[in-house]
Length: 105
Image (cartoon, rainbow, N blue to C red; front, top):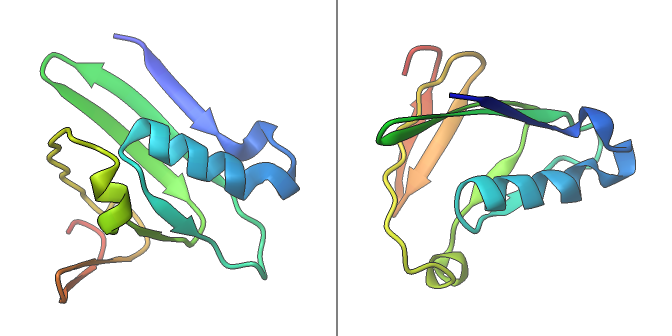
């Protein structure tokens, strides 16, 4: 089962955020993504398909990713996403509920 790596490393710094938005939307679902403008952005997604499940590891600079009504309406497919925080920290917000993620969550 081949592994695919999608990375901003081969993209000019000016094009990295637009490239990243396109990559995450094509890899997952239609999403909005905002990155801090005051620092450089780097990101990679390592993908591997196994029978019945697709696995991905995301290693990226700080960003805010959201999926609002407009993005949800753009897709009729149903998805299940399970996320494990391997490094750093994160926050997941859904319908007013917030979960702060630390390594291992």
